[in-house]
Image (spheres, rainbow, N blue to C red):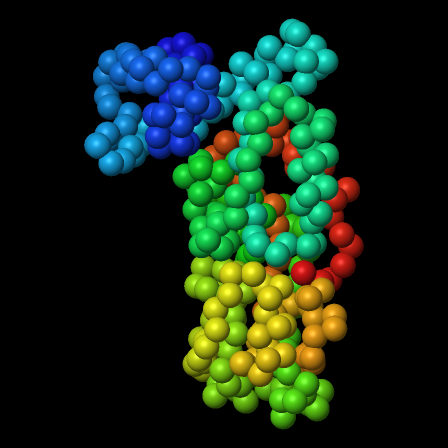
Length: 299
């Protein structure tokens, strides 16, 4: 089993496409395909299910992926020890994030990382499925790091480092009857139309769980994928929302109202798979997050 074979395998496993994997590894597709076939012969089992429309990992391929990544990272660490740190980090780093995130200065963080480590191929994506989608991609080794919202201290298969904790409260328009209240019982909201994020996003999951535990139901009339757009919909009188303090509330015709009892808080965290040790590139990225984190209770 050669290093180049493992590099080709990891590229195909992460891209699920031989053409993109060849482009990523600066090889021709026939070379990548031949290398994967040779690796499968050597291991005595197929690593991919191939069809004319899709490429998918087999059970054997899924088992090999974390071990292949660990082997490549070990080789990179050994090479760096011999050659010296002056050559800098190499490899790839795939980061997932939530839309509208302001608690972390992502442009500054990404720019800082790329300036310090130009040899690392870095990509950043926003998951349409929210935090649950990002966590699933971490478990499937489709991402290396992700910024996620969680309402629990532990998530199976994932290592979490908390960044900030947010306390949701009710947000209503200035003309709403509840705008004059100092605190509202959640039971009084059962008949209200709500604005929230889609299923799978932490703010939605947290609110759904709170209402379910209280034996209450609610009606979602507007779903948005960016939490920071909620105040505009609330100000327009389309519904109420349960959200943490948002910078986007400034200047909007909205009023925050406390809940009694309070809603369950949720935490913004940086996550990585617990099945793999942090690679040098991942660790370098994690080390840069604190200087680019804002000290605020606002999202």
